[in-house]
Image 1 (cartoon, helix red, strand yellow):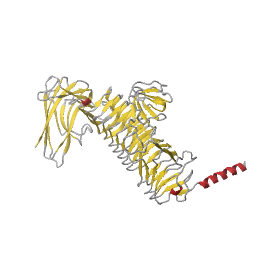
Image 2: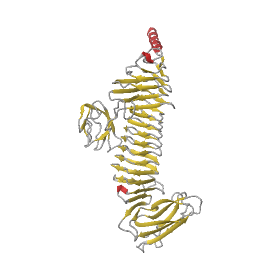
Image 3: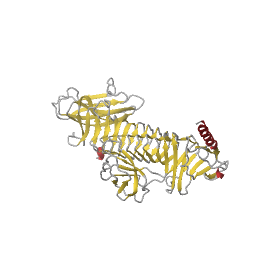
Amino acid sequence: MKRMVSVLAFLLLANASYAEAIKSNGTGVGNWSSPAAWAGGVVPGNGDTVTIVSPDVVTFDVDQSGFANGIGLTVNPGAELECSTSPGVYCLKCNATLTLSGTLQAGLSASEPLPASVTLGIDLNGSYTINCGSSSHVALYCTEPTHKIMALTTAANAGATVLNVDTDVTGDIWTPGNEINIDDVTGSLPDSEGRTVAVGGITPSTITLASGLTSAKGVGAKVVLVTRNIRIINGKSYAITSPVRSYVAAEIRTANGINGASGCTIGGTLSRCTNGSNGGSGVVHCGSISGCTYGLVCCTGSTNRGTISGCNYGFYSGSGNATSGMVSGCYYGIYHAAGMAVGGVVSGCSSGVYCGGGLRLVGATFTGNAYDLRCVTSAEIGSTTLGSAIENYQYNTAAVPASSYVSSVDHDQVPGAFKAWTRGGVVVSDANTVPAGYGTSFKHVCESAEMQCHRQAETTVEPGQTLQVMGKIRIADDHSAWAPRLEIIDLDADPLVDAKNTALASDAIPQPDGSLRDWQDVTVSFTNTGRLGKKVCIRCSAKRASGNVYEAWGTSVSP
């Protein structure tokens, strides 16, 4: 037994003795496979620690997938590791974090990507990452398909292997053996399954899977091509950490995707990660995020121009973000967003937008969601279709504050249509009950005796100016408990935010008991005597458990 232990120890020491610290030759360019590229004339092998020094550009042209452990790699400032463009399959296998202070390059640009005849794999082989220093640059340009995503034209039962799809990809880079995700848009969400395309499995109208679906998928379920010819795989942490002003278009299939990106563009696919892109700033996402727990997480000033599907959370938290692409089949499409601009499509989610304030929805389409909006505190919506059965859920509950106001202009993309949601009810434009001199009135559908149902518009009164608002209000019920009124409100001292505040000007209807069914005049004015512009809102409100109130107003400013 002691003899065996001694032999094993000897073998381990012998193996360790072959691990070397290898540097590039420091004289310029060379292929990784060439001994001349290395200072000692020896091509790096399994277990070696490799450094590429400035000003060297080393062309990676080997397959290390057979290495037992992999290598350690550092790319120094001013140095570059680039992938060969000669047809072949290349694999860089790591046994430690790849320290990148120089450039990692594959392909030249989005229009000149790594040729489809080349496959580069970066196998992180454990809890390792590509750690980017301040002088680093990642430039990974995979070949992208013409059609990155398609949809089911018919429902697919559990066990189904043939999927009927809406896009012909026979001339695209979709091929048998590719990995795809099928992300549902109905039922219990998220529901994302990864499958392999079967041999002969692509026709103009179908995709055949190598194995059947675990659960049924509805019409419109998204089929996402995951496979790319640049792959970052087998990492238990983030694939890439802290890239700056970089372009990352690759298939990323690691425990987590990209962490702390700044000023980067992300293409390719982030598939089945816990966090897709976390903590990014100024990131533009133009690829596919599919089957992740969190898609874009705690990002700021970032934009989605691609597709996020089959995730628990499409966008999670963050501020100042935007989406003009697609968010589909997520439990929460957009969760706890602040100051976010939403365009594009949000579809097939449990909640399209869940919580958030200061939102701008312009030219967007919401469809097939259980709730388009839910618990949203404030939003300005323009020319947007809220096409789901429930447009705005819990708008009239304690889930939102008394000051909550969500308004939609050109509602459902109908010119001139208006709708607003408040704690006290809903306001809609009305062309039937209109006072003389106006083309439209606004009907307040009251739902609470405790909370105001109101319409409001913000404006700024400059120093020395007087804002005058002249309105008309019509009631059909007894509103003696709280007379409908027209007000000018200081946005910094809103009574709906703090009941101790009072309006700058307020005028209630003179006969609130319901005895007068005609229009009643209300007028308010405010003069700004200060030295700075005053931001105010004009607000017309009613408060009643039920009943309709109609109103309209006009404004003038002098001098």
